[in-house]
Length: 276
Image (cartoon, rainbow, N blue to C red; front, side, top):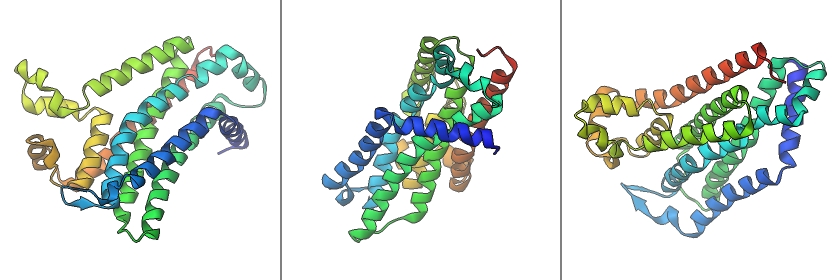
C-alpha cells in the first residue's frame, strides 16, 4: 500500500463517517441485534439449536437481504458519481495514480460496510458471554468470514459497474436488475419452474449454486444444520456430491474469487479508458 492509496482511503473513510446514512445503517444493525435479544430469540429452539446459535442464523438470513442491496446502492455510484460531480477530475489532478484512487475507494467502502456488521455480530457474542450463554466461537468465526466474503463480492461487482457505467442512473438501474436476478434464483426450492421444463435436476441445482446469494445462504445453513434438513431433498444431492467441509470452503472462496475478478476488471477498465 503506497502513501497515495492510504490518503485516498483515509479521505473516503472520513467522508463516509460524516454521512448520516452510515450512522443510520450502523444503528439499524445494532438495534436489530438488541431487538432479537429483547424478544427472547436466544431462548427459542430450532433443529436442536438454541441460544446464540439461533441468533446467529437469524442475523445471517437478515444480512442476506439487507447487505447486498445496501452495498450495491451505496457503492455503485462512487466512481461514476465522482466523475459527474467533478470530484474525480480534482483527485486525478493531484499526484494520485488511477490504481491508488480505485483501490482506496474499494478498501474504504469495505471498511465502512463490513466493520458495523462485524461490531454488531461481535457485540452479540460478547453480550452472550456476559449473560452466561454458550458462545459457539467456531460458528462466529465462520459466519464472520461468510459475511466478509458476501460484502467483498457485491463490493467488487458494484465498483465494476460504477466504473463502466456512463451515469449514476445507469449504474443504479443495472445494479437493481442484477440484484433482482440473483434474488429470483436464490432459493433452490423456487426453481421448480425450471424442472417443469424437463431440465435435468442435477443441472438445475448446479446452476443455482453458481449464484453467490444461494451459496451464501446454503453455506450459512450448512454451518447451522450440518444435514441441511431445512432444504429437503436438495440436501441429499449437495452432501452426496461434496463433503460439508468442502462446501464451507467453496462458500468462502467462490464469492471472494468473483469479487476479486470484478474489482480487477473494473480497475483495468478505469485505467485504460477516458474516465473524466
